[in-house]
Structures are given as structure tokens and as C-alpha cells.
Amino acid sequence: MAYATSSGHPQYTGNFIPEIWSGKLIENFYDATVLSAISNTDYEGEIRNMGDTVNIRTTPEITIQTYVKGQTLSVENPDKAKLQLIIDKGEYFACVEDDVDQVQTDMNLMDMWSKDASERMKIKIDQRVLTDLLPDVSANNKGQTAGAISGNIDLGVAGTPEALTTSNVIGKIVDMGTVLDEANCPEQNRFLVIPAKMAGLIKQSDLKDASITGDGSTPLRNGRLGMIDRFTVYVSHNLKKTAGGEFSVIGGHTMGFTFASQMTNMETIRSETTFGNIIRGLQVYGYKVVKPEALATMIVTV
Image (cartoon, rainbow, N blue to C red; front, side, top):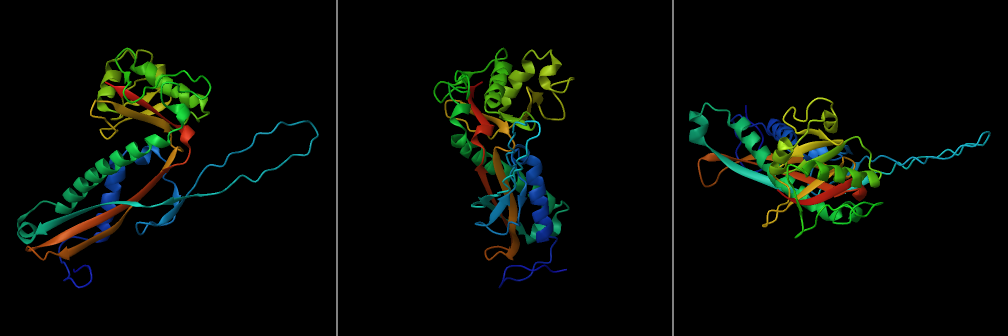
């Protein structure tokens, strides 16, 4: 069976089916990245190209009013405005399957390449997003005077980070939770993204009280670090890190920022410089902080 290719190029009769590749890549990508777990990905509209706009569903703010017996109720119509997110970023890959390899190999190259491309997409996009979010975090939720009410919680700054140890690492996570509490951030669906070395300190710390993990049993489970002070904790190697070894830990609520991504182009063309077929794909995406007060960051060394 032959599959359509770019205009002007011969058809490819191998086992490459663009729709299947695209589905595998985006599925593997979302399985690997932390972004889908820590953001609002509930969007409307189909992403077809870079520059597209999607409508992000947001939660309206309901007004709580004081009731007096016998009064006429004031009924509001909650704001149903949808945030528009522009898909303005993209990453691509392009690789060649040599005709000799196609004939001789007994390996499923499509599966191998889709998994590898997804992992590398994840690394590139995670690094970019987890760094770009930092400037948009509320000023009350970072720095040495964090806390919208207290104003005296030290979450570290560049050049003067929080030096984490097994004895203080849990306390600093609790501090981040307090900062979000003071910002009236909901307790459900909170997340915390930390570097691997910080995860190591947590595993060596004294977590005898299982209640701090939020599950009443164990802090370590199912490949994730579990829950600590209402945070679902994720380990990532893609957090911002300076040359001096300072990490930017980020936490918050999933409503803090939006993220949308799609593999929009997947095609094969005949190589003009070798005997083989070039397979290439473009993944486009966009992200935006919508509630700065629902995010917090801490500068640490471990």
C-alpha cells in the first residue's frame, strides 16, 4: 500500500503511516513530560499550525454573599470568558531510513524512533517551559520576603539560595505550601517539581509521620515521590539550573498556567542525497501563566 507524500515526491510504500506516527509521538510525549500533569490542558479547538489560537477553559470566580433572612437574592452570572492561547512555538525532527536498513532490519523502527523523538521533545519543551514560567510567578510567592500576608518566608534568590539538607528539606517544602496558602490557592491539585538530588534528600529525611505524605501510608509510591504537604511531587531533570548549581524549584496549582501541544506535521519524502526516505515531524505548542498567585518558586542548592 502506498501513502501520500509531499507534492512532487514519489510515494513511499514502507510501513510509515503519518497518522499513526503522529498519534504515537504525542501519546509518548504526554506520558513522559510533567507539563500535562502540572498545567491546565483543557482546551477547545484543533491545533493545525503554528500561529493557531485555542480557547482555554478557565474556572469562574463565584461571589460569596451574606444572607439576611427574608431578603431578595442577588443572582450572578459567572464570567464564562475563555482565555485565548496562541500556539507560537515549535520543535521538529527529521531522520532518514536507509533503503538497506529497511530491507535488512527486523526491528520496529517506527516504535523506536517515535519513543526516542518523544523523549527528546519532552526534554526540549520541559526545559523551555519550566524556565520561561519563572518570571511570571507572583512577587509574593518567591524571594526572601515571600508570603502575601506574612512577608517573611525565605524561598531564596539567585546568589543567595536556600541550602537544602536532610534536616530542612521538608520544612522548606512546607514553607512553599504556606506561601500558597496565604495566596488563597486551593489545596487540591497542587504540584511540586524538584531536581533528583532534592528527591534524594527527601528519601533520606525523617518521614516517620506518614500523615505528612497525605496518603496515610508511605511517601514513596508508583515511581513518583508521592505527596508532601498537599503537593504531588514530581522529579525532573529539566528544571532551570545555573552554572553555580542553583535549581529553580517550581510548585503551585494546575490552574496556574495553561499548556497546549500537538504534532501538526508528519510526512515522508524521498531523500535527494542518499537511497532512503526522510521522515520528519513538527510539534507546535504554547503556554501561558494565567494565575501568577497560584505558582511559587524557590531557589535552592543541594
